[in-house]
Length: 132
Image 1: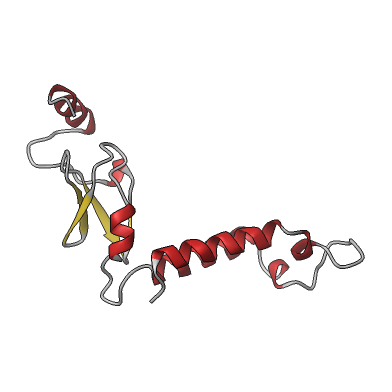
Image 2: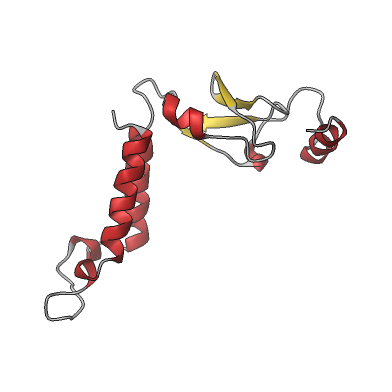
């Protein structure tokens, strides 16, 4: 299993390779067309690589790697998250972010609201009144 820190290193190496002129030009300075980079659209190649790295950052059971869980924070409250079933639940506020195919969906719009809270705005008001 590839650890999160290793995945980050691999992504940095790929980014450096894509910025290097050798990936885009032949020794004569002309654009290369024989490079594997040009066999498919670049965004699809990058997306595939990132998805591969994210897949390897999850354990075989589909749960989140502990190193990744340690880094992730709630985008609204910036609090730590804990894994509860198929959700990452914020320690402050209680927003529950879904984990789909081992990948956390860290979008406030996708989060499940805590019981008794009608909307994100209501949660923000409640948090503000509590001083958090």
